Length: 396
Image (cartoon, rainbow, N blue to C red; front, side):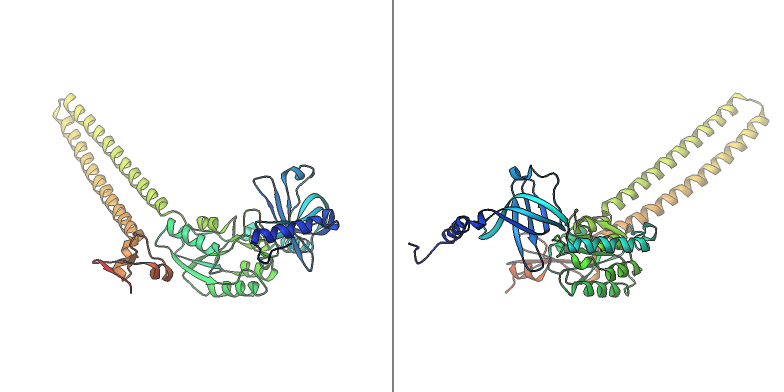
């Protein structure tokens, strides 16, 4: 007798027993298209089997996958053999796959390949037409969902590599019927901003259906029509979309897109320091050469006693000294100017320089930076640093 009140575990276990006791569900063959395929590090395979009207989760354990001649992939049309049961902890029923027979490519994947081939023949993906990505962009525009993990990853990378980097975010839907139109509109609006030097188009991973908005001919043409270079970071490293082929640079993930778009601040400082060291070595080498030459002239004067020789060598020595003085003064002035430029560059990259422009740095009681309104409301004590000092506030 079933009790009036069941625990969640008891209910899911009961459902599992019902499924496993059904004669028809003990051995089924199901045809459909593979989507969201994942080859787990454990050796198990996880994916979704779908058709035009529905989908079901599937798992193939490591012991069963050994009989496969090759691994399936997203878009494959297959017939699965297995049994239907429930996963008690997750409360979901799924097919426990025992064998996979390949039928062919899925409809979406076939459409993807057809469009890719047609646009490629047209020359839309020609590498010769790709625009160069600037090493130190003044302003970066990001087109992505404002609430997804992609934007958080991008901001984290950019702020780590250069805290003073200017960033413009264009929020769009990255999945669904309106995503294509919103992305194209955002690209057009970005191109109206003269200060933007590179665009990142990004979203997190997903199935071929989730990413389908980026397999658009109109979006591909909008990317190529952009006067600003476009870097894509769509999905994971195994995901390729039409937008990736049209972009000027394709990154495997949103984080990598940010990394490829901006150089480390420390990289620029290292180049400045190396240039200073090379200049210093060049000056010292030239000084040693001139001193050696002057010493040689002095020895020749000492060794040749006739007064005429002395006068001639004295004139040569004076001329050499004059050249040395001119060269040394010029090199030292050049070195001073380069060091001043390096100092100005260091000041420009210093995030505290922004305080002179009216900005403030706000930290909570733990010394952590306040980056948004949510963190501001959670803080018990606020430390506000302005250009002329710090003050402490207790929010009400």
